[in-house]
Amino acid sequence: MDRIRIVGGNALNGIIPISGAKNAALPLMIASLLTSDTLTLENVPHLADVEGLIRILGNHGVDIAVNGRREHQDGSYSRTVHFTCRTVADTTAPYELVSKMRASFWVIGPLLAREGQARVSLPGGCAIGTRPVDLFIEGLTALGAEMEIDGGYINAKAPKGGLIGARYTFPKVSVGATHVMLMAASLARGTTVIGNAAREPEVVDLANCLNAMGAKISGAGTSTITIEGVTSLSGARHRVLPDRIETGTYAMAVAMTGGDVTLSGTDITLLDTAIEAIRRAGAEVSAVEGGIRVIGHGDQIRPVDIVTEPFPGFPTDLQAQFMGLMTRANGVSHVTETIFENRFMHVQELARLGAKITLSGQTARIEGVTRLRGAPVMATDLRASVSLVIGGLAAEGETMVSRVYHLDRGFERLEEKLTRCGAIVERISD
Ligand code: UD1
Image (cartoon, rainbow, N blue to C red; front, side, top):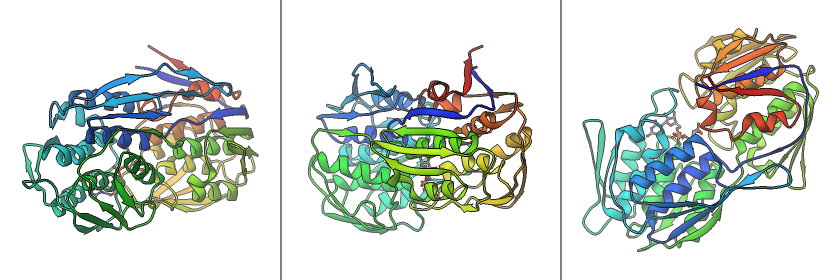
């Protein structure tokens, strides 16, 4: 199993190209199940989760062609992938595939809308809380589907003639359930109005792509989304939006180590709340042409309290990284997690680097220390693992991060991007 070795202490200087967003690419890829034409996606990141979903979609009958990767001047790659699902080969998403990645559960929406039925295993994914599927069941039921749980699977069946548009308000904001409702309602008869919809930029990206395919969706990016059903969708060409979580992660890394880095190919407006928190912590962050410039001052980090919330609040996917940054602040800060239970598994690993963190319910109290010391640590989930990398970059001596397959799920060429900016980071394959 691969490990990542980091020797901390170097400032980061240079350019880091930001990849296409994993959390946008996954639902966009799944949307290819809605049409028999080709959906072409540009800027698809090369990640374990994307490769996993390619296998899953192949199982449902999607033909996939990947254009060669081309390296650009700033070191970025862009991958264009063509997805064609002439006919759906299988409406079952088996446990072996869905258990590896929660987002693959979302195939339930397009399969149900296009084929009138789906049998999808209950999901797996990151071990961060229980992550139920009640909102998907309620939402699809509102569109007329019969939903039944049997032996670890959900059997979903649309009424004769297909799903029916309806008004449905989510009792709780869910990104995944919003994606699924957008896809399912696009091919339903009549109009659907979703209340309390997720407002994440990835939801807007999916809606834009579906509209390019012929859907009639308005209001994406607000809490109320209206979808007028159409009888069929066509192919389209769409560029995956930049990864705001990767953007925020590297911005926090620079704030932590000090240095001057331009994050290219990204957009500051995708993560206002996180940028605000990074600025309050003392780093200078500004929009520059084609990206964001971050100037960090390393040892002068100010303590900042954050609370995770659905977009536009502080993203839960940056919580661990921000906590990493706060471990070296000049004072006490608090990080409160409101989206997922049990998303503090990085706390004990950060403690191995010398961080002083105490937990009380969903709030962590972080007492900044003047120095972190390198240590062997273990990645526990995707975002937690990158907080250990950030910690390692600022720690004295060597940090060895094991179980890096978590990182590979969501961060494209992390070692290379950091090394180009002066960090000492290497992958060790045993
Ligand atoms: C997506 C992101 C993930 C991010 C999360 C929150 C992808 C591939 N993943 O995950 O990186 O951390 O949004 O921003 O885009 N919930 C229920 N019932 C349901 C569904 C969800 O109670 O049926 C709860 C969850 O347990 C959680 C909350 O709703 O507490 C938010 O989850 P959700 O927005 O659905 O997260 P995902 O879409 O799985």
